Structures are given as structure tokens and as C-alpha cells.
Length: 238
Image (cartoon, rainbow, N blue to C red):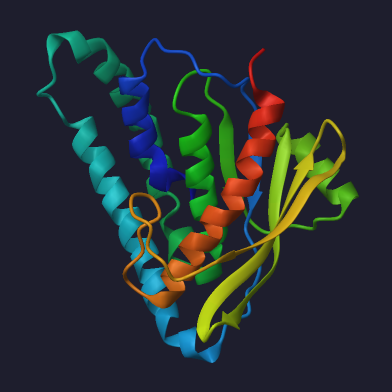
């Protein structure tokens, strides 16, 4: 759910005002997976993952509203804050409109939702900003991907497959295959199977609530670590 990261991106806009990024802007679609197969021992964690996602959503709404109503900024930051607050006036109603969608969130959609946040963090630190959004699961044959890229005017589409848990040295791991489609090449230019473990690595890779949450977050970490450099190489400003 792309709006969950809006506040951080808007703050980044303030701190990076006037700076220029190193990437040519692009549009990326991250497709939601439609299923995952996990061990029965992790079933008890599903409700926690899904409720945590809803809590993050409502917290993000409150944070955006707090920033919208914030008045105690310096004279030097007045122009930047006004621009940000104008954006928030448009973003908040859009975010609130997604409430019913958020209530339907499934735990395995953490893969796409958090990946979307991570790619926004990686590529939208400075202007010019790219458009990186999450969309519902769709057909992923080449013809369908081409139509999706055409209709959405996207440069890339990321999708996930074969999401499942296994056991390694007595501990669960979550494996998934991530694929990157390029509109320019009209083909899948990168596919890689990676895995997430139970380790909490801090910062954006902190996970302490449940085993399933850690597996999902670390699966995103290893997936984005592989895909982001491929996009970066293609979009680097010469």
C-alpha cells in the first residue's frame, strides 16, 4: 500500500530541497503476489502481521494530519513546508480512501507493499522523483506485462512467484522468486530466487514481533538487494 510511506517521502522532499538525484526518472509497478505457502507452525503469526499492517496505515494517516497542521517551522523552511502541506491536502483523502483495501490486506502482500516502500526510499531521495506504485496481482505472461506497461505508461514491472517456507538447520526460511520486466526490452530482464531468515538487522530491516514478520521483511531485503542495482544501472544519469 503505497501511501504508507508518504510521510517519509514528503519529509525527504523537505530535506533534499534543491538537490538533484543521480537517476533518470522512471515508473515502476510492483505487483502483489496472490498466494504463499507457509509451514503450519507459522499460521498463528498471520493475524499479527495483518493487524500490524493496519496499525501502520492508521499511524501514517495521523502522522500526515499532524504534519499538515504543523505550524512551528522556521522562516527559512516556510516555503518548503507550504509546498509539502499542499501535497498533504491531496494525499490524505487518497490515503483515507484506501481504508477498505487495507482491511483486506493478506500477510503475503507484505512482500509487495514493503518492496514498494523500499524502492521509493532507494530511488526517490532526491529530485527528479520516480513513480513507484503497488498494484493488485495480474497475469504475468509477456503479452499481459506489455499491455500493463503500455496502459500504465510504466518502464518496469516487478512480480513475485513461488513464495514458500523451507527449513534450514532446523529454522524456517522464506524463499521467493523475483522477476523484473522491462518495457523497453519487452522481456523479463532479471529473475532471481532469494530467501529471508529470522534475523533482525535493525533500521528498516528491524523485525521483532513474530517469526513470520521477520521472514517476510528479510525476504524483501534480499529481493530488493538484487533488483535495485539492475534498475539503478539502467537509470543512472550520464
